[in-house]
Amino acid sequence: QVQLVESGGGLVQPGGSLRLSCAASGSIFSISTMGWYRQAPGKQRDLVAVIISGRTNYAESVKGRFTISRDNAKNTVYLQMNSLKPEDTAVYYCNAGGQTLMRRHFGSWGQGTQVTVSS
Image 1 (cartoon, rainbow, N blue to C red):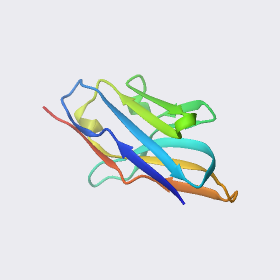
Image 2 (tube, rainbow, N blue to C red):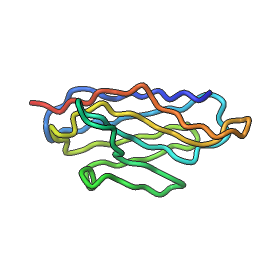
Image 3 (cartoon, rainbow, N blue to C red):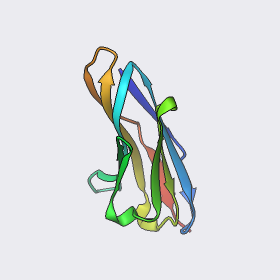
């Protein structure tokens, strides 16, 4: 079992910044991918940013404003969000994939954290 716990969401004004964190714990042997997705009301869950073996990939809508990073020692992934816009409002979910101590592949989701951008 691998659990993901997110933190850092909240209410921010347009143009402001927030930093999300997601810590993985449990029966972890290795984590190959960590990423962030978001889901706005009435819409599907979409990829925001992902980091795979040190390489990053971003949705076009957040390029230049969001930065994903990872602390391997802490099994934690971060999402620094700058120049936030109202359209960034959504529930943000952390995702991780890798292998457990039993060498079984896992894919886990966090519980989600609300980000609201509004004046």
